Image (cartoon, rainbow, N blue to C red; front, side, top):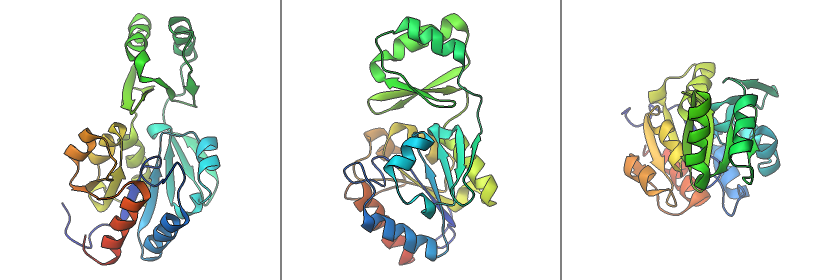
Length: 227
């Protein structure tokens, strides 16, 4: 683990981490702006699709790089460039899944599919029949289906390469099980106070409070030189 002052970037999950009541508050945005002004590079790593994160967050300009669809898509706010960094969603698998669970609500992106966690076993059955090389990742009450090896960690690795940084130079902050992949890459893993038990168990640091309040406390420690 790097010593105090060695971190150069912070990567944040969005929902449940930067948010209070589903939105990022003006107070949290101001704390992020102060952190960026202090010289930290800021990275957002979310399971949302680009259109959904744009609708939810009006301050994407605070981030140097944004990773979406749980590691499958890269977006640069400064240039507006969106890049698919994983294989696209397999149309054959999607058709198979619609036959397997016709009643399920499926949320599809460019590479990721999300649906209720109760459908996980039937998704695995569809994957097995077709021989699809996919991973199922738990995320609260949902599961995310992505190409094999694609997760938030692989997405963050892409962002760090673009920024010229190493994994041990980044603090990662999250709240759900799909953020465990970030902990495997970052130099310091931080769980917000409302994080899932398995994430707290894997974290180097668990903040008090919830969501944006936890993040603001973390930023206070960083700006005070205490991390």
